[in-house]
Image 1 (tube, rainbow, N blue to C red):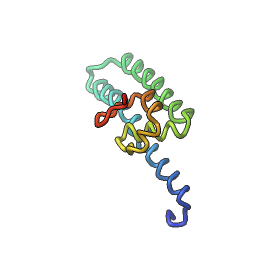
Image 2 (image 1 turned 90 degrees about the horizontal axis):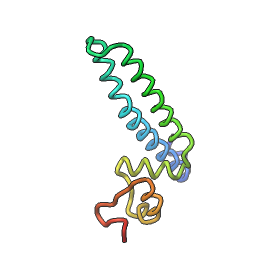
Image 3 (image 1 turned 30 degrees about the vertical axis):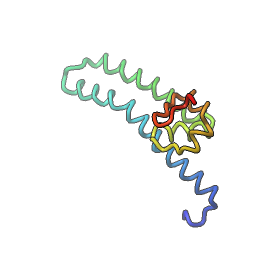
Image 4 (image 1 turned 90 degrees about the vertical axis):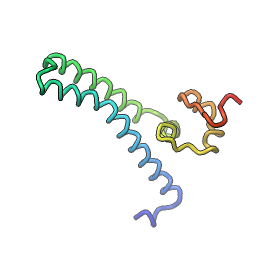
Length: 114
């Protein structure tokens, strides 16, 4: 199917796949402590009422993740995904210096403070 896509459509598809990969990474990072809490609850070392509070806290965190991925400008989301996945090109770093600084990017090879 990819061979019938225009270059622009292919780029958009690749960006969408990268955003999905980043979304999975962020969500799994947020889920891992909750999973550990379920394991503690199951083994009897965590009371149920503490687990329910942790579930509630995760739900709030997941709502923030949802907002980040659904209400962030597309270009910014692509840059953020590339930054977090370590896929920024030198050109993207140069062209988006200010936005990347706002997103917390630190270029360790050349420095953004030039």
